[in-house]
View 1 (spheres, rainbow, N blue to C red):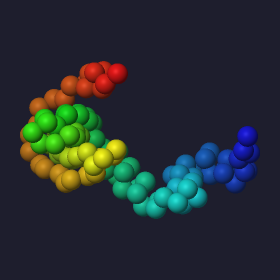
View 2: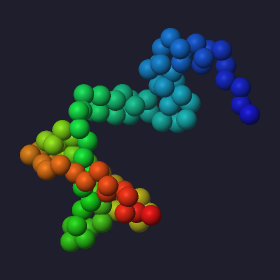
View 3: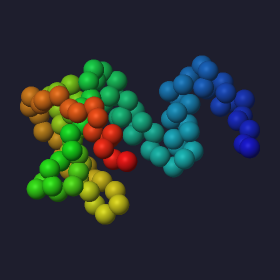
Length: 101
């Protein structure tokens, strides 16, 4: 079992954002990605997910506040981001993942 340093405990308690940036850098992740993700999602009130039809290729769309869609397509055993669109979107299906297993 790994012990956590007093410095990290201090950061977690008194500067959580700095703690996550520090841990990200420690893990080899550009800490700016954490800031970008947080800035993208922190004011979002609603997230919907739509699977893509097989005609479009295998993938899914994440829709933020029914106005901004982020498109992801399968590439082997993972997905890649393919871009975004802006418009008015329908509600997603909250059971979309229930059909997976």
